Structures are given as C-alpha cells and as structure tokens.
Image (cartoon, rainbow over all chains, first blue to last red):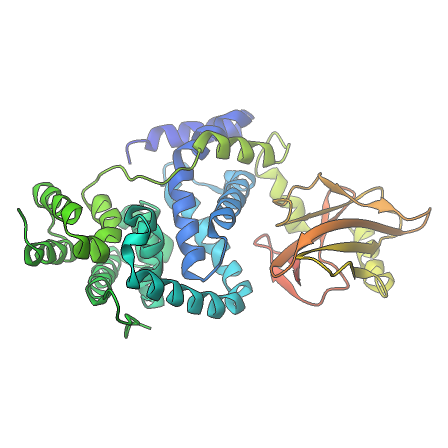
Length: 199
Length: 206
C-alpha cells in the first residue's frame, strides 16, 4: 500500500486532536468502502443498496473514528478498517435475512428479464449489479474473501488478517471464487435460466 | 481480432491468476464488439482490473460530499477512543438505579404507532426515565447521531417522547441516550441486537 505512512500520520494527527485529518482517511478509503458495503448488502439481498451502502460506510467510518485509539500504528489501517466493516455487516446480516429471500427471488426475476433482452439497458451500468448477483450465487465461504479482496481492494495479507486465515487459504478461496464466477458467467444464456448449482 | 473462444481462454487465465495486460486489452476490445461475450463477462472486468493493479472505477460517488457527511457525523470528542468508553463501561451506580427504574417504569410506554395510512408512518418513541436531564434518540434513521433527536419531557414528569416519520417495510435499530452519555436499549422492545460496543440496541421492524 503506497499510503501506509500517510495513513499512520493521519491517524496520529487525529489522535492528537486534529479531527480534520480524519477526512484524509475518509477520502482515501470511501470509494472502496462504499463498493464493499454495496456488495455485502447486495449479496445479503438488501434493496436500496445505494443509500444503504453509503449509510453503512458512514457508520463504519464513524465507528472507526471513535475506536481509533485501538488501531495499532504500523499495521494496515485498511485491514483494520475493513475488519470493522466486515463485523458490522455481519451483525446487520441477520437483521436483513428475512428481506433476503424476497430480494433474491426479485433479483432472479430481474436477471431473467435482463437475459431476454440485454440490449435494453446499458451493459456498463448493469455491470456492478450483475457482479453482485453473481457473487450472491457463491458459497458463503468464498463470498467475503472475494468482496474484501476485489471490492475492498485489500491485499491477500490484509484479507487473510481480517478472515483470520492463512494467506494460502485466502489465495485458494480467491481461486475457487474466480472459478465459480467464470462458470456462472459462462452459464448465462440470453433466454435460459441460469440458476446455478453454487448455492 | 480476438475470437469468442480466445476470450474464454483469457477468462481461464484470469481464474488461474495468470492474466497479463496485453491479453486483457485484447479481451476488452473483443467484448466491445461481441455482445454475447460482453453480456457474459463484462462484470468480471472489474475484478480483472484489480488483479492487474489498475485503479478501479467506483461509479459516480462524490467522495468529497460523502466525506463532508462523515465528518459532520463524527462525535465532538477531541480524543477519539474516549468516546467509546462510556458505552462499554455503560453505567454508573446512580444511573444503574435509573436504568433499573426504566425497566419498571417503561411498562405501558415504548412505541406507539399512528397514521398507518401511507408508506411512511409516525412513530412515537416514549420512555420513562426518572431524574433525567435530557434524553436523545440515535439510530440508523439519523446515522447514529447522538444530538439530532432530542426527546421532550411530557409535562413535568419522568416521561419523554419524540415523534418521527419513518418509512415502512424496513428495520430500525436505535438506542436512547440518557443525559448525553448513557446509551440504553428500549425497555419496551424485546428484540435487541449487539451494538458492537458491548451493549445492545433495540430493533424495530415497520
């Protein structure tokens, strides 16, 4: 991470009472934090993921701020921050479990509808949603590593520290995740049903 | 020009962790012209770019605006880290007595629903707290801001209330904040969730 030193510098300044220095960290990490939250909520089947994702990302930044003294300087700030996010979303998960079943069937309907006529919507715009739908089909043990690594843009080491796994285990899961996404992508048919066996 | 078959082999290389920049560019060019491959593989390009160390496009978020919102939501404490402690330590003996009283006096209060005629509804949050100086409400409806929703005292008694218009069909998680520092779950609402600080928050489903 190119910004390691400045992360810690910003943290030091915040801890010394310079609240505005926290903005540096928010600006640096908010795009991927929002992307991560959007995916986490999306794969949990939450509607209105855009607003929810921002709320959740904000919640994570506020919580990180109030516990900033617990961050150990010299370690990866990104890993620490995303660990808070992952835990936060875990407890939100069960709240939304009931919504999930509903949203999943809605997502499937949307996917089927989209497959009938993909040209109706810009593929680019659907790219993110389509990815989240595909991630939803992954087994749970692959989903979080994929989201941390690809959407949170963390390193393998950072992902491993959050998941309390070895780096090799993370690499294996990322490989399995990519393989599963490839099969999901290849099974997408313009008119067929692409519900897969990955559930 | 790359063929569909080759495009699939690029995906396979990516799965194996063996993708290079040149082949990725050819692949991008292919899905620019092949609707079927674009349909299948477009969404994977986000992930492939991460593996190639490219800066990702994150959509139209306005980072500055988001940062403004976050900064405005931060608690006032000059020393982050001190903020968390009162929630963990939770309660002083005097406040413990008050909290105990809340559980008793909370009977019959809690939440009242009115005007259930639209997709938003008015919820009256009511709590009885003896000898409180102030009671605030913080939850996911106000981004856990501990100042924006101040309850008003009903008459001169121990009962505090506030009405909020909230959307139906969603979940709300909240706490009352007594005297600006003691966070308590709603004594009238049996459903609670871990608040991440060693305490609990109330869960309300509308």
